[in-house]
Image 1 (cartoon, rainbow over the protein chains, first blue to last red):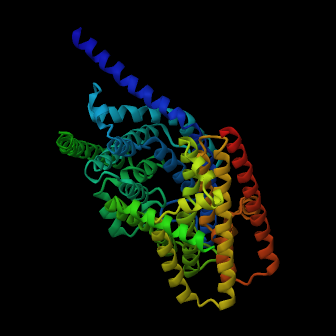
Image 2: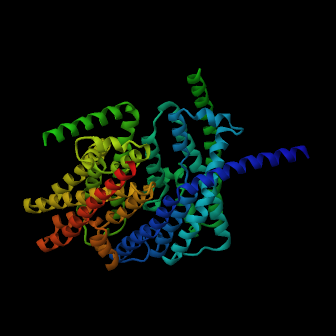
Length: 273
Length: 260
């Protein structure tokens, strides 16, 4: 009974953080509106670009994608991108630069969950104001529908992608304990994750040797694999293998984040005295 | 004139020291920009090896197109992109009065203060790509002159957009959304307008003439163009720039009134 009560307390505290994230997100209404307006713009560009390329190449399938699948790929990548969105590296940097880290440490949460649950509120808001509208816009552009089990597998891979993205961002944020200002590191992270994740071009366009390397890196699980699961490019078995590897990366990155946080904390405490 | 130039140099110096305060961050920022810009050409290489590429544009021509886009946005980054951020910041902190009391035109002052060193990385990448493409395509001097002129037009357009957003910042506090929207919309300039359907092509040519950032200059360099065509897309840009100046002046007047 007591344990249950503590659990409830814990949930209530975390919910408060989620709500804080949600409310902070509401301040950026115009940002959401811009993101929403930009979705049809991007899709229009990709539509015209790929239509022209398919016509010129005079084939119906390029690197395993039909035109409709290619457009669907970009819609799904966009949705996964919004779902996995995280900017905790920016918050961490701001705290470090302003000297506010101590405030976060005074709260009754670990530094990690403080940021995680806060961002969860952001994602929850974005789910309603961005992801569902983009899904509907995607249907206008001919988004391919997927079937029951693949949709469930897709959701699982997308949730794992959001963990991986958050963990990488958290680790990048922690580097500000040593580097102080990390605008450059943050941008490098964004470009690498977008490019190697497959946001700009499906990874099947890369040479085979590079694709083998990508298999051993965590990046393709951020966009490319979830999108391909949605598009039913893999068998159930393959989906499960990819989900397993994504889970493995979550664990590795989580342990890594803990270790780096521990030494960042020491560095911080050392600077304070 | 030399007074303005000295002031500009002073601001460049300030910006330089500001960046040098966090050297590691600055160099990583430069590397990240170079990296972000090189992603485009890498995608082009992949596209042209795996497909027959973008219709109407050979590989070298499209590299020229991308190089032009990167150069225009790099120069804009150096000189214009910080302007709205600077204005929003100063209006919010009440520092804008300083600008009004200084003995130079506020817009000139704000523009000088907004110089951003980072953009040099993009400018270098842009020139690199354009130089490589020139060595393959051998454009004539006349074409190069028109190309350079249209690039200046592109800078004028982007300057106008930044002034417009800044003018709105006097009234509406959070114009970051507009800046986001500008950058998202400018993605339309990343591919030739010839690919787009008629309504979108009209939109990027005349209503929001961002095609001037790469499509107009690159296509005028590669293919023969007429003066009529140049005038047709120069006119809306000049009109837009004058409009943004008028709105800026009006914004300034309102700001002064609110302060006094």
